[in-house]
Image (tube, rainbow over all chains, first blue to last red; front, side, top):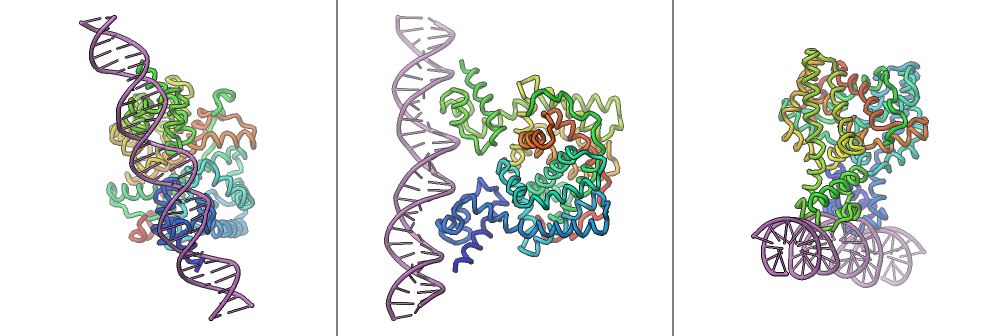
Amino acid sequence: MSAETKTEILNAAESLFAEHGFGDTSLRAITSQAKVNLASVNYHFGSKKQLIQEVLQRYLRILMPAVDQQLKQLLAQHPQPSVDQVFSSLVQPLLLLNQVRPNGTAIFVRLLGRGYSESQGHLRKYITHHYGASLQRFVNAVHLAVPQLSAAEIFWRLHFAIGTFVFTMASSKALSEIALADYQQQVNVEGIIHRLMPYISAGVGAPASAVQNPNPMLDIA
Amino acid sequence: MSAETKTEILNAAESLFAEHGFGDTSLRAITSQAKVNLASVNYHFGSKKQLIQEVLQRYLRILMPAVDQQLKQLLAQHPQPSVDQVFSSLVQPLLLLNQVRPNGTAIFVRLLGRGYSESQGHLRKYITHHYGASLQRFVNAVHLAVPQLSAAEIFWRLHFAIGTFVFTMASSKALSEIALADYQQQVNVEGIIHRLMPYISAGVGAPASAVQNPNPMLDIA
DNA sequence: CATAAATTCAAACTATTGTTTGAATCGGTT
DNA sequence: AACCGATTCAAACAATAGTTTGAATTTATG
């Protein structure tokens, strides 16, 4: 059966990608764990690149509509939401992924972290292209929560938030191990997400810096 | 002359590493840009791994003592500093790198971002091993600024802050391009650093979440 | 049951990687 | 000028990568 092989490849790929990253996971490692032939990856997916895309798609297809719905519901009840409320509308959709697939939330957020740091902007472009409308709705909701910030400032703050989230999740395994060893804390992905929320909310909602843009024309990076 | 070749390799390596990451930069690309023979990398540095280390060392040797001194000075003047003051003590040392090497600040922070996300914890271990005392002094200063937070909470907040910083810097080139295209903003690394400060300060200083650790024994990540 | 399409398989292919080798060359010392 | 250690160089090496191939096998269809 074709569907089985394809699914086995996706399952093996997502866990290996999440653990070691895209670049450091070979097709041979994937097909070996999936117990399928090496060539079946190219047969079913065309290339490694497309395999990576489909691995992410499986989650995004579920996550993004859920976020949309959650946002819609929030704005209906609170036309002027708080930053915390807006970001908290991501939590339930993220945890929903645990029901779709065992350990789905952890796997997805790590994939997201890998995708953002390893794919030199491909993932960002892919998401903005396929889910631009949802993204815009989220940005608008943030703007409702912090109307005093300019659109540009919100752009920066949101990418700071993405960075916080994505980096933390990509390192979540290591961080959890340290927390256990040094502070006797048993933490899971859900715990980390909840721990992140106050940080991100406060950060995004912080008053803008007085010095907006020092040396504006120098040393463009 | 030996010193010249070694320096040329380091210069070429750091810019290529910052731009494309460690894994995606081949020794051939480095030696080609440095106009030296391929084998000279292994002759002068032993291996690619050690080359990466020396590239980072060149900056850390300058940055860390400067941070130490800045912190010492801050605490002498303000025995109970604010979060913003503690994190702002990183700014001058970071900008100092621009004087050591052209575009040094941007290159270093990108290297840092790459190192944190690509080296599966090697960089973190390296820094804590070689600069553990300085790091502890910084953590202590943060604790002075937010005494209401537990040591464990500060641990998490600091790693959130590292994530914010490191991810933003690793993506700084792409973000700057978007900011220019969408908001007509000319931003440089110094500008981004200043923009980051309110976000990080507010995040680290945020009140702790009410729900500390839901489902403590489940699904350890 | 037979035919055709879909899938699996072992093997080879091409490209790239970090590293090593041994001879050639350079630079300073006696 | 002759020597010697340090350095450079072109070339090859071994390992790994993604991809392709063509035959073998399975699956579905008439």
